[in-house]
Length: 67
Image (tube, rainbow, N blue to C red; front, top):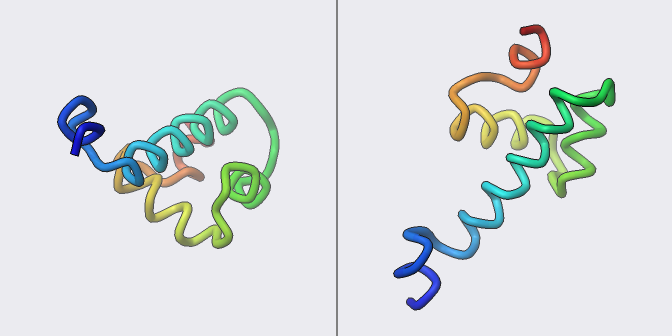
């Protein structure tokens, strides 16, 4: 309750957002494959990583990399 009141989210969502922020930086700053970035940020499935990334940023990881 305290966490949610101060952060306006659940601990799980907060941690997921941190992982996705790190993944976005890796996509922008490295040449690692998307699969490697997904694994490095704690996703066991590249497709789940892509879904979570799109839900947060409204863009697929591969499209972000192309920009």
